Image (tube, rainbow, N blue to C red; front, side, top):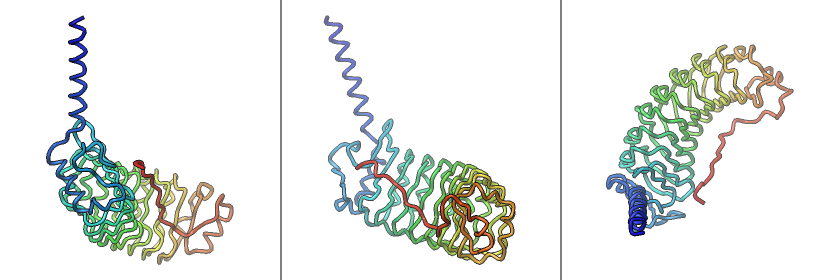
Length: 295
């Protein structure tokens, strides 16, 4: 009986130790979270943090094996700038700060988050350019930055993020050419570059994106001819090219029109060919779909 009691006590001690370890993160990671709280006016958040309570009780924070792996503060009234110390959270897999009032430039150290799989910063007021080294985030599957004030060119290094499935940079102030390197993103399913100031031709290399289901390039300053390589995008369901300066849409002649649900160009001739679509054509619209998992 005594041995049984000792065994139960030992098991309970091990359990408690496991729980404590799960709730404990390194001082540098905790400091980075506190810095985020203070830099974004945490006391005014819709749901604030009690910094005296364990980190695992803080809204939107997930901890695994003693490391912060997720921050989800979607639509939580964050105000101010993201601190450079965000780069200390090197085990972070998901960062969702969408639909807040964040300003300033993106921290340059955000590229240190090498395990990041999801980065959602849409519907804020970020300005400045994308970090040139954004391509170091090679584990990213979703990069969503639409509806900010980001500017400058789209870095060529984006083509290094070969696991990307969703890339949405719409409704910003990006300028310059569409990077040829985007043609390397062979897992991409959705590409949104709508409503920027992009110019030049659509790179023929984008024909390599055979898994792409949605391509929205409307409301830019793109020109030249539509490359015939677009016809290689056999998975396309949504294609929107209107409000650009294209010279010719003849490159679309061989496209399988029956597979498309939405097709918009500035060419009456080609839009007429799609009169049997299951749904009406529409203006390119940046979609915003998200769920606050913590409410």
